[in-house]
Image (cartoon, rainbow, N blue to C red; front, side, top):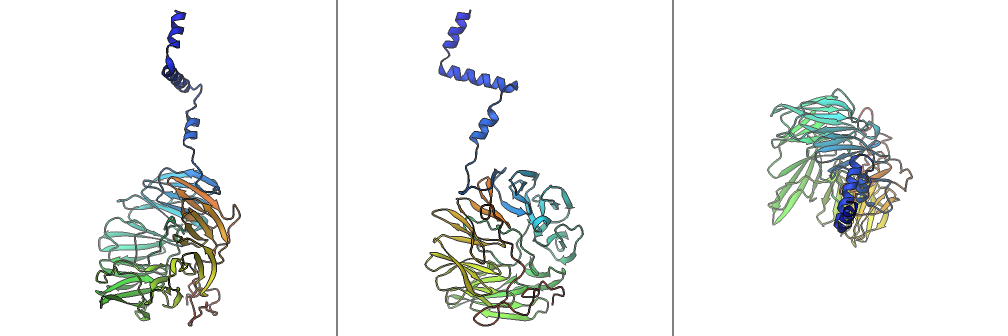
Length: 482
């Protein structure tokens, strides 16, 4: 009998021995004696570093991120059907929630996360660290999130809607306003309003800067009309219907009426800015193309390009220009062949005409603050904490100080820039995300006052006003608001 068994074992062959070994391992694992599978799977599934130098931490999230936002000491990762919160210190998961959309309101440790489900009314406001529900609403069909405000809207009927404003961590509305409609259906987070279109950049997420401060005025499109709402009081200042050749936009505290007329085979543009509180014209410019028309009969289908309180246009001679939406003054006029890559109220990033350099311009001083080499496919985005630059061949991500151009971090990576915070940024590729600190762990520069919007003086050299003190160029920070 023993001889027969030994002979049977000897006759197993290679496949037989492998099968016998697998059966043995399965039996040992099932009985709890020894289980090699977790360690083996970790070895197979081990992630490669997504950048060089390596990030502070790298984690694989449950699905490909739709958005990533730094909220104080946490990172909020929005996926298709769920939301994850991770600690900024090491990337470990804090909580997870089933939801179809999320949006961050507030700033720093005062941030909150609004979450909801598509096609369902209502939303919840969560603490980003614990995931605990701070406030719940059952009626809202739309939510707009900002650094200093959260807006929502609910409708009793299609033509009877209420817009409400909340402090991010508030429990009672600051104000409410009547609107004769918002849109049709449930709109989830941050439906488009009539403002400006941001410039885009390859490998830099459109929401990389996080939530912005709420503009002084917002334009809500309702049934072909525009309702202009004062975000400080909730008062509806204007209810305007555009003309046949007009497009309306609310930028820099003004209602812009953009007229595009087809004549002699060309489009002729006139921009008129109105103070919504008084209905009076404030400024007017002719000949600046704000890129709202598709040249099919000069029909305007797009919002003007720009960011916050500034507009981007093309002068009659083809040079790109930056205008202040508040007073219409020319903040920047590029040289022939230069390309504007990014802009905000303070700075602009421009690619030189020969495509070999990037120039950092300060709008209030109309001067070049920094220059660095660049390729023809460079992209850029401006955030309150850094100017992010993407390069191709070789693939790199670079973050520099917006004003001085000091390099905060330079990465050899094909990953995307997803979110920027005071001391570093989140990058990602597929399901992998990682955090890199400025200066290899050194604290970043203190964040600028993003509410201080420089307004230029008349003349060829733009300078910030000297009589405004610390109230801001438009006195928007003054207690009396005057």
